[in-house]
Image (tube, helix red, strand yellow):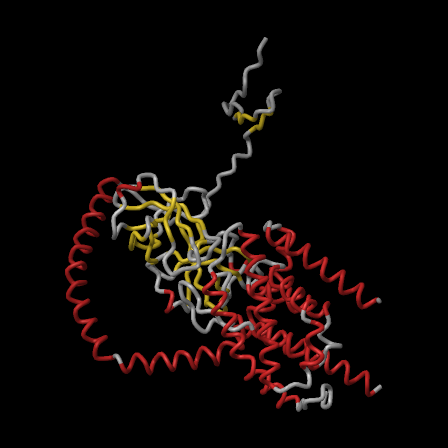
Length: 293
Length: 170
């Protein structure tokens, strides 16, 4: 009888947790943090020999294809040499113009490098676990890149681990900008290798090869991070090929946007009678504000 | 005293193998834009212990294992645990005759269990996200979990020296 009671209680608890999970209730966050902090180091330890075996198998495969890779690299070098010349010329021109204008650009981002220690490996979620967390300065929503392109954002944080939901996950929604053309759209993951674009501002102007960049609408992703290129239009659905090389995803870069807050301690907050808020700065003249007679 | 020791040892074994199973499902062997589904080892372990130590793999224990799995894998919390518990309760009557049957029949029984677990989880996840989740990945993961079962089952029975009669060695 007692066992049945405990079983029913456990079932009710599971229903309650499902409701909280489905509504993304923050009350589950502490449980997620504990699970991340426990599982990440163990997964890293257990996975080390398995990753070693995988790397060894990959090396054998690469060795077999060495000749064709070599030929491909030679062709790439020829193409990149031309781009290098263009880049050097533009860099010099840029430096000259900045010097003329006396512009000093402060770095906008800090970067943290972390190792991928786990992945969801599941049918329902496309996410990875990394070995950097709150202690390393990671914040919820931190953007994660593979080195060149954004791959996802942090959705759950532990002290020394974080879970990153990938752009391909069915719950991923990223406001983007297509260039050239400045077309606004939403990049929506649907658990396929090529997420789709929806809510295009000017659908008629979309062409294959356009670059897909983050647009900072919604404020989660900084503006201008590359995500991929427009790949194909299939059944009136625009698909995007991610630029990130997910197959080589062993280390990732977390983009921490710098927030330069200037706190003005003299500012006064005035709440109007109609409930509105206005900010007023007191007179800072040496004589102070003049009293009205 | 000896009986208590055996019970504690069995409990530790059930918890340890369940935790290891969840971790193995989580190891980043291969990352891709869409991860190749990896077997759900925890589902295998739950079924294995339900057959061989039903007094240990009770509904509250299934709750603990399912919850740990949901939280560690990052799926919608509750979807995995609820589907695992419902499948456990529904198939509870099917299990006693399976215990003494040959591996092939136990494997078929596991097929029914894993099918029910994944179908329920697909429904619950689709309901939570208000959109139909892709079925191909679910079928692939369910299929892989089903295929791996005999290997894990035989290895664990050998390792734990479990005969056809339940609890002979444990």
